Length: 114
Image (cartoon, rainbow, N blue to C red):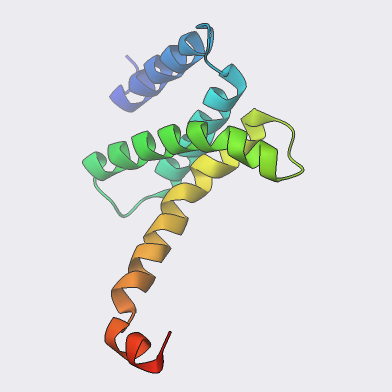
């Protein structure tokens, strides 16, 4: 019998592949975003299962949504590659921005005049 993680990953991969066949869905961007999101989950070792699931969903959705914008703004021509990079980077970049915003002394910034 396969491990539950393997079975879940196989089922999710199948669902993503089938969704990519639906009309109006960019299959390349979806598969690229899924692989980028999977990379985020696999490399996030110090977090719980619920947080991993949240990271997976956030990375998948944002990677898919950002793929066309990346293709339009960069020399990357494949929505699959753009979706992969967007999904792989969205959590890391966002968490870094959140930490920086927490450490900003807004009152000192306003007193200096911006």
